[in-house]
Length: 267
Image 1 (cartoon, one colour):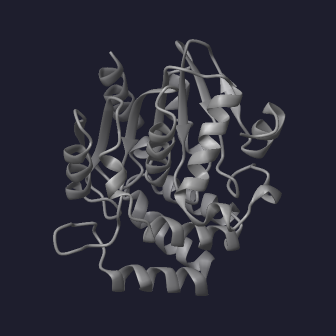
Image 2 (cartoon, one colour):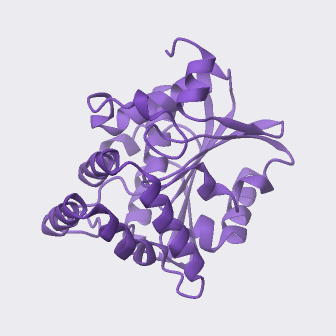
Image 3 (spheres, helix red, strand yellow):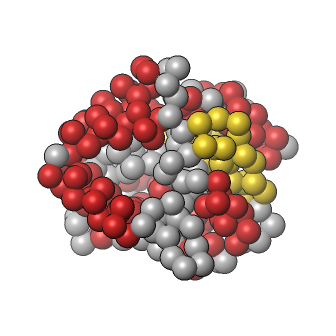
């Protein structure tokens, strides 16, 4: 438990809009709550929209960053639980992008009485391929990616942003993603990247007890369709929606489709 609501709100730069059933948005690696700007406002008309930045990202309190705590995704999940507890939220819908979705899943598994639904946009419980699992990357791929990130973080971000966004017709979105990467403290970003790309949260899928929607892009180099299908298969009673879009950030490149998928699921 955090020591006070003020601590948690300041630490994670929590912002709240609207009223009604709470819907919490969790961003992915190298991003901030700003990345939900095309989706979240659609829900403020009938929900209490809660946005936040993971520690080390956006306008969070960087001094709160502790490598030991954030050496696994459980550290970030504990922050989400603290936010929900300090705001005394129940019946929460957690919408998480990429690793933010896995973090949200861990939070819901830890405190199921607070969460009522999960919406995972481009989630990946494991990025590395194994003999019986397709994560999208070999161990050599991941090692090489992390080596490049360690050697030249800003060069990595400039190269990876358009690849991740995958929306060639909207180059301004790639620029926005790159700028978001560049605003993240490189030391923290490198640590978060290692935690993200080397984690294996496949066993945690079996522990999910709340209704879950998996929103998958048809063509995503970071989390391919096979990963979305795996998540949906291993989360009991979940629903998979494959959007006819390219890229890992459908909430930015195809927000209307993401909003529709969420609305349809919640209704």
